[in-house]
Image (cartoon, rainbow, N blue to C red; front, side, top):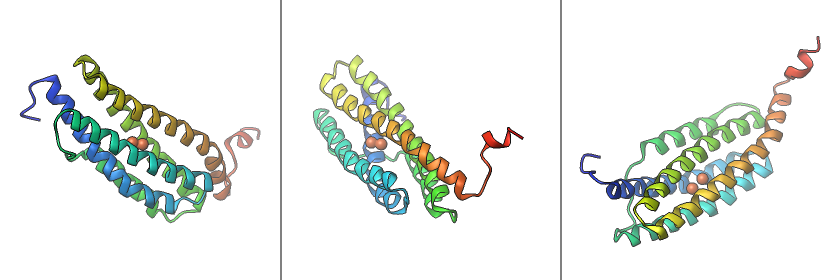
Length: 176
Ligand code: FE
Ligand code: FE
């Protein structure tokens, strides 16, 4: 960060962070897909892997526009989020409970990506880097759609997780 003195340099830094982060996700998503028991969730992770490869391609294009090679910079935030996802994968729990944990981890990743793309796109717009701004916006739109899909799947998975634990739903408890 020490050599960053301009908004342009900050944009480059953000894009390199995202490039690293998306490449880490390309490695992590197959493990998430393999672990998921719910078939919609499994398909969701597999579909997002294909999308994530597309995100890497768009970021490669953005770096090319900036005259830079396809090379990232360690993103500690994404490494931490992926480590949390690893904890969900390792859970010794009923499959639906593990799936609920996987969705929680995945949504944290999506929100991080949405925040990072939103920031970088705003920088690109201000700098008049319109092509880069639209590449970042396309990735942002797909992250948003994935997040919505995860919320939908969670409504089923969370109910299954509740049933799998043999717990009484809060609603029926309160009727006592
Ligand atoms: Fe992504
Ligand atoms: Fe994503």
